Each structure stands twice: as C-alpha cells, then as structure tokens.
Image (cartoon, rainbow, N blue to C red; front, side, top):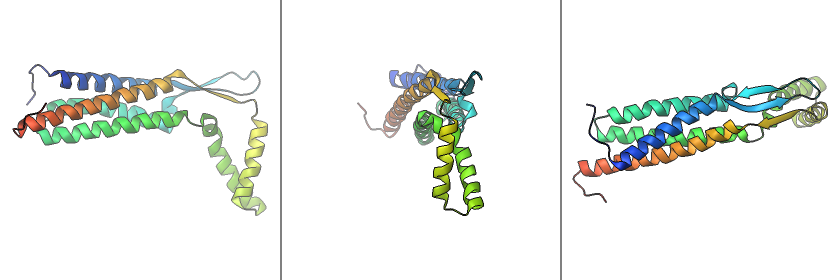
Length: 190
C-alpha cells in the first residue's frame, strides 16, 4: 500500500538526489556528446550520446532508475525495498562509469571499428599477421585523417556528474531502507 506519511529527511534526500540525478543522466544522454569535424570545410557532425552504445546504456539506466524510485516507494516489504535500493545503486554506478567511458579515447571510437575491419582484410589479403596489418592500417588512417577533429562536449560531463548525484541518492536510499529495516526488526537506529 502507498505510504502517504510525511517522508523523513533521509528518505526525502535520497528521493530528491536519485530523481534529479537519474533524470539528468537520461537527459544528458540524448544531448550532443561529441562534435566531429573532418578536415577542410566539410562542416561538423554533432553526435548525441544515444548515437553511441555508452549513451544508449546511460539513457536506459537513467530511465530505469527513475522508474525504480517509484518501485521503492510502492514496495511494502522492507526486504524488497532493500533489493530495489541496491539495484538503484548498482545502476547508478554503471551509468556513471558508462558515461565516463565515452569520454575516454573519443577519437579512437571513430576509427577503431574501421581499423579492425580493414586490418583483418589486409592480413587475409597479404598473408601477414594481424598485428602487422593493424600497424599498417593505423598508420594509413593517421596519415589520411590527420586534420580530423573530435571534440567532447559538456553534456557528457553533465552525464557523469548526474550519475554521481544518482550514486549519492542510491546510497541515501539504501541508508533509509536500512533504517526502516532496523526499525521493523525492533532495533534502535541512530
């Protein structure tokens, strides 16, 4: 049954941090994370977080955590609330790390798929080890794309920061559930 009593400060803080953090995490994932500029006057290519696997995972986790807050509120059993609070915390950590991983080696993300594919083809065609073919293809990619710029945008960092807020909210949710559990067991909590 839905508890309509006034929330404790711990419960309210956990709810607010988790709700705001997960909402911003999902919002950040659909915004521009990267702007790619090819050499010459070819224009720019804005890339939303959800155009990348990391952004899709981050958005999905942000929405899932937001829904989980409702589940946390509606759960009658303290043990079920505990499981949901742990899931929120794990989801928040994964969302944060996933958004952060998108910021690492952004330029490499654009070239790695093509380098891998072309390296396999070159190794097969020339009959050379894959490592040697990868070195040749990478050198050619570097030469051909020396003017290619990939610039990280602020929204990826908003996603990371929002993920950290969600982690804090998850910890507060877990602390609230722990307090509820101790009270349910008849143990005084501080």
